[in-house]
Image (cartoon, rainbow, N blue to C red; front, side, top):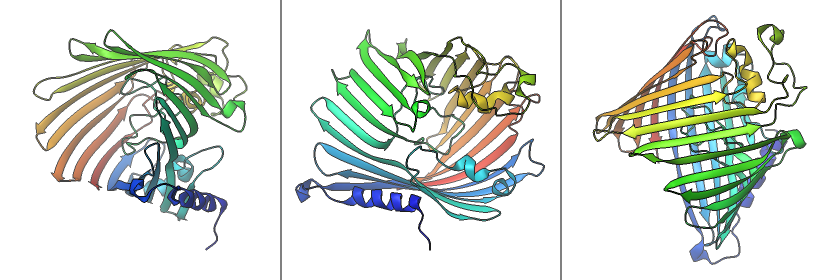
Length: 402
C-alpha cells in the first residue's frame, strides 16, 4: 500500500506523542476513553431527487498522557465510515466532511467507492505545560471562547452549529495558547492560529474577570486580516442563567470569490460594504425543580439579510458569520420523562423570511454506557429562505461509551 504524506505526518506525530520524556516511570500515566456509534438516517432534501438513506459507523479514541506534574498531552482519533445515498448523490460529499488545516491535515481517506467512504482524522494532538499561574498549550486543540449555549460570536477559532449534533467535541485548531491566571476565576490569554498568509491567520487576546458574581470577558485581535473587538458575560438573574456576547469587526475584505453565479440578483454581497459589522447574542435558561428546562437565545447581525438568506449561506461562512440572517431566534424545552428517558424539543426561527427548523429528540439510557437516541430534523420555508432548502431527516443512533 502506498503511503502518502498525510499518513507519514500522522504516524510521525503519533510516535512523538508516545515517546516518554526523561521522567520517573512512576509519574508516567495514560488514560484512554472514547465511544462507538451507529447512526442510521433517512432524509428528503430539495436539491436531491431521491430520498437518501444512510448508515454511519463513528468511533473515537482519546488518549491522555501525564508524564509529569507540569506536562500533559492528548491525542484524539476519529473514524467515520459512511454508506448510502449521501455519498452517492450529494456533490463533493468527501469535501464536505474533510477537515481543513493550512499546514498539516492529519487525516486520511481509507477507502472511497461510489456509495461508501472511510475517513479517519486526528482532531486533537496537543501538549500542555503549566507552571505556577502560567499555562501554555501547543498543537491541535479546542479553543472555546464564549458564554452562550447556541451561538458564540466571540468564538474566533472554531465557531460551530448546534445542528452538528453528532460531534460533541467540536473540531480543533492548530494553535498556540498562552494563559496566565491572575485569580481563581480570572486570567489573561493570548492565542494564535497561524496561517500561510495574513488572511488565514487568527490572533487574539482575552481578559476574564469576575465582578458582582458575574464572569466578564473582553477580547480583541485580528481574523482574516480584519480587526475585531468584543466581550461576553455569564451570570444569573433570580436563579435563571443570563448570558450575552457581542462582537464588532471590520467589514469583510473586498475581493472574496463569488460563491453563487448571479448572486447580485438576490441582494448585496457581504463583501460590498465598508461599515463595521456588529453581532450580538442574548441567552437565558432555567431549570425547574421537576427537571423541566427552558432555554431562549437571540442572535443579531447588523449586516444580516432580511430576505433570500439561504442564498448567502456559503458567503456568510466566508465572512465568519454564524448565520446569514439579520435575526435568529432559538427556543428549547427539555424534560426527564423518566430517570432514564429525556425528551427535548428545540427550534430556530427566522422572523424576517418566516423559515424555521424544528428538532425533537428523545434519549434513552438503555444500560450503563449505552444510549439510544431518536432525532428528527424538520425544516420549512419558501425557496431561497434561510431554512427553506434544508429538507427533513430522521436519525436513529446507538452510542456505547468506554
